[in-house]
Length: 172
Length: 276
Image (tube, rainbow over all chains, first blue to last red; front, side):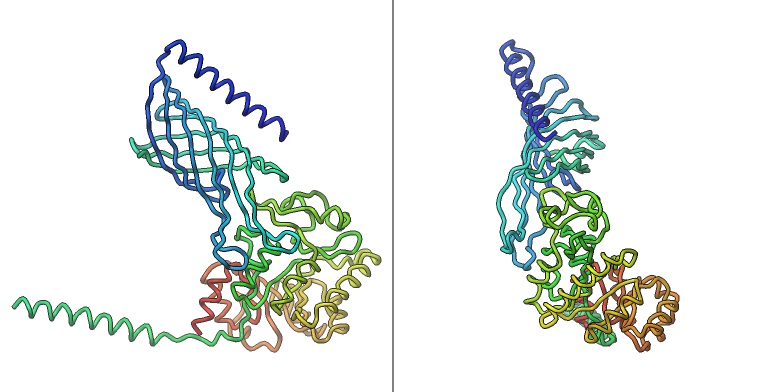
């Protein structure tokens, strides 16, 4: 299962980039349509909570292509009560369809470090965990939206997590 | 005229501040110094640190808790494991019953409460080895004494005796169990160790504590609601409470002069106790 999901996401991304290139060649009506938003998420790919900055670059009819950078932490102080945060930084590429009601798909990785005891010594190292994400977004105000998502997070050397997320965000 | 107006305003504000300070100072606090702050499984059930993980227990002690509560299970080869449930499935990367697995097959497991966090499941000995430097008070919540199987029961007693003997110099142990007779036997072997009977009803547990001559009881805080505070405060045995989640429950536990408060919110309880 772990090996299938990265393959599927790779194929999706390849198809997406191929279709983008093909359509650009044919001079289809791609528009450079920049929009930005920021959102607060409960759970989600950040783990327990997260702040995410999202930027849409291109649109084609009702499709929007976007990138996202997030930040999250489980705790700022480690188990020795010293400032030494656990950090999660999710990054993703995505595509969304719709306007007021929107559904979308994202794929990306989370860079994360967690302070633990290994071989009886305090340690932490950066790891990368790929994830897939499906979301539904509803704009209840011209500038405000709510979002629910289901994420499939694959943590190396651990099990995979089917992890929900709920967000509220603002268009900038 | 304008000057007078400012003076009036100043006097009003100053009087308000003075009254506020006077009332704040007149608030009475009980003496809470006798109540011990115990981290329930370390940092409690709502922390992102999993209960009974070494990291959670260390965090509790580094926040200056007086001690921690640790749940104890045993593998089929007689290794005591710090773990709450009988089954591994819900909280860890493993499956099955702990007491049907060998330690070797458990030693690489980790807790799975949240993505990215990889805290290991550890044996009681691995944990005590790290905690002993803090000279803490540790309540061992004995989840199963294996009374239904003589061999397992003997294996468990021998493993526990070894742990208690090895660390008795550095750690102040308290044993908590539902088995009154077993606790009574342990008390005979280790007279310096306190024994708390886990109960659901105050009066029934009180009677059992007296019959078996134990040191006290461990009971859910909510179960004490029906009992007069004066009775709880004046009993001649020790009381430990659990399921203490919020500020009001922390405050109630302190007001009742509970000996060991197994709290889910250590920092708040320490702040409240500090006001005494």
